[in-house]
Image (cartoon, rainbow, N blue to C red):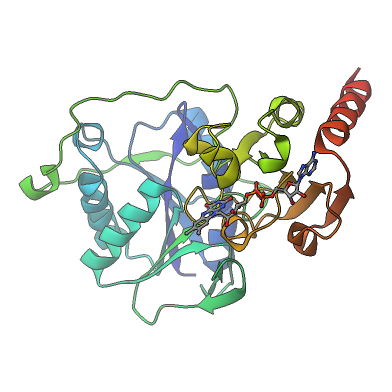
Length: 317
Ligand SMILES: Cc1cc2nc3c(=O)[nH]c(=O)nc-3n(C[C@H](O)[C@H](O)[C@H](O)COP(=O)(O)OP(=O)(O)OC[C@H]3O[C@@H](n4cnc5c(N)ncnc54)[C@H](O)[C@@H]3O)c2cc1C
């Protein structure tokens, strides 16, 4: 079986859902070996082992926090040289893609970004040109690097797993990797909701909200999801730019995407078309968004969302 190296990302010292998705895909191709660029607790190693990991490699270096991504990609290159995987999988986050790009250049490897599926032979599926085309690609090099969008698969644990010991790995970082130092961090105030790219549910509002996102936020909260917005809503100043979904905003790929008062312009679709299920609420039955919706509701979004949230609350009571 070929080795598949997965760069794990942790949230609060626990493997992220996106990492468990990568492991589920990695097992289709070969034996998953995980590399974590931080300390790994026994509990975290157990979660990784329960998802089929055969080795857990932990690399720790203060440079990972003090500098931009170059130290991470340099460390990963050294781990790849030591482990000899056929494939390296990373999450399609902004950082994941930058690490992947640098890694592929260093290794002379093939690179596919933003994949949504992976076959047993390493062929990656991705949706391109605003979701108008589905491509399948497999690199012709010894090592392939693939980044996968969060929420592409459901994480599946394995049966009958055994604990895996954490192996510390030392790396030597060059001076060149310390080129761009982080001088300050200014975290954005949290909304208490999950991040737009990782959320399994995204509820987005458009110009049809008329600027009132109360019902959009209420449904997102009832479903434990994130709030998104169309560019028209963002340009009107109704919602911050960081929440824009689309070609010039964030690309999301949740299990459920709710488009409320959004017409479905191609630039918006480019950012949400790989969502697993799309529900559209629009007062215009001819709105283009209905062409890609799995469920369409023609009506006033405020009334429809109010009724849905009330129904969910009644179910939970
Ligand atoms: C280079 C470029 C990049 C772009 N990038 C992006 C991007 O990243 N993301 C993005 O979203 N757009 C982007 N756009 C803009 C895009 O073309 C559209 O203009 C935008 O998506 C429209 O937003 P909207 O659907 O909210 O508004 P509209 O197109 O005005 O649609 C509003 C919809 O709300 C419905 N509606 C009105 N009232 C109600 C109600 N009470 N209840 C229910 N429905 C109602 C209407 O029937 C209509 O369908 C880009 C454009 C360009 C040129």
